[in-house]
Length: 386
Image (tube, rainbow, N blue to C red; front, side, top):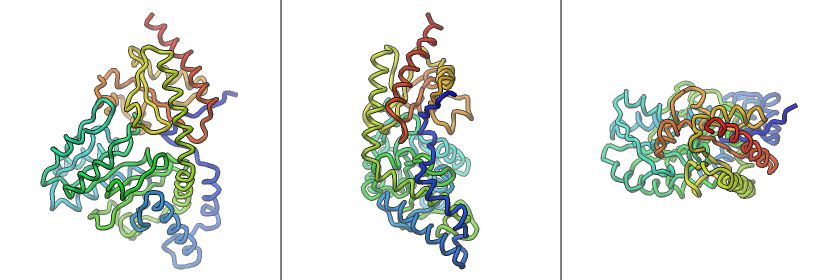
């Protein structure tokens, strides 16, 4: 039987056995509705409150500033649309980076149809936003700036602290999508002056279908859902207690093990970079060489960009799961990556990236298997052009 090696942790992760063990009682014994007054409901409410505190502790916030959602997409939509409609009386201008996740960009396209004006902040060839340009784009009608903490396709970590200072100076709300960075690098919401922060569970060895939006006290935001008034009225719906409990456990484990994991994953990433440059003259890295997530690497081969899908299938046949880019868009659109085009690649090159994302359960043996597989598969592709 073919041994599978999973190297697509930026798309999703498996549930850590410690997380699953924490969740199981809330799927069977403690299944009450957290809004119910009886003992089963009280047990669920206690678990909800504890989980909220645990997630808050991971980013330095207050528990009542955490709103649990169904995931990152909902939290991002809540942040962008919620700020837009709650503050329409102040202005209708929103600034987002050109390399945001599709859910942010598509939410902004929809807001344009509702009368909002969206400015797309450019990035340089490494994927970093231009701070000077950002300052020039802010005007009296600007109500929100949204820049992701670290990019999902190329792994570049943005200058979030600098952006936060600028937003504070101009009295503009600042939102950051931290789904890729949460649990992998330190985040302190007070240090970075963010007003809203999106995090989720399934990127950090927790269950799918659960996430959260941090909303700083005093932030004027409108809810997406209306109903029973759960989550302090911001997100009406019966809370997913097993998922939330699992999310909180996963987050806590990531904080506890962050230093060890970051060191290990950076070593694996650097080993892959050294291999690529030592063995392929046509290899190049997408994104920043240093300011990037520990276990994340996006790379391409000059002249072979059109063969990326074939390369992925060849690797999959050998038991290696890697990605061509964002899982949220690669299977639903035939267009070239907007992220890679934003950093200066042409449409042909922007279809040719390979994303490898190491994780908690990756071993050095797995990295060696990948490098050996790349030697064989890239040689097969080169033969096409010989």
